Image 1 (cartoon, rainbow, N blue to C red):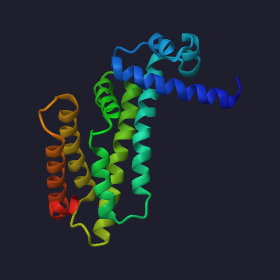
Image 2 (image 1 turned 180 degrees about the vertical axis):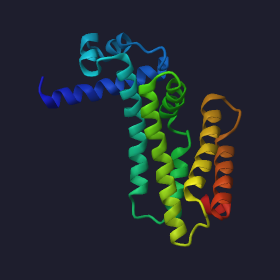
Image 3 (image 1 turned 135 degrees about the horizontal axis):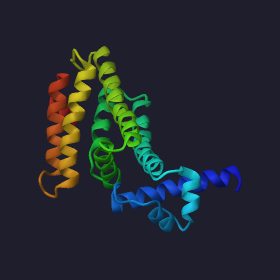
Length: 200
């Protein structure tokens, strides 16, 4: 197998693993399930990942990296801080991304028991906070936001979004997407000295 073919095969295995994990959950996914879904031998799965734990951690990282690539598109753009903030808040909403949110929730849960998943989860989770803190700091510097503690504000905003997003993704009709968006705008506006309407 050429190196390029191996890379394509690895990418396809990771995508398939993500699909299987969404259906079965991290705890119930077996390497045999991924191999069967991908139409390959279990030996090939072990060739690429060596252990089930490594397969799950890399599949989780792969899924979340797709979200982080979208985040990078926002944060690296030349848009002003308020526009970036609005885009980050929209990006974080579970609407339209149920697969990635399912992976996030499952990943957080399994991280309590699986050190390799915890490392990946922590690294990727912290990226959201760091990027949001950077956008907030830029907005403070430009006089758009009022915030004495951008890093703390980023943590508090993300904590509210995480909690609401779990409710929205897991419990049908407990809260609506509209409530999610309104409450996130309200909390964010309070943290940054804005009118919630500015975040519409």
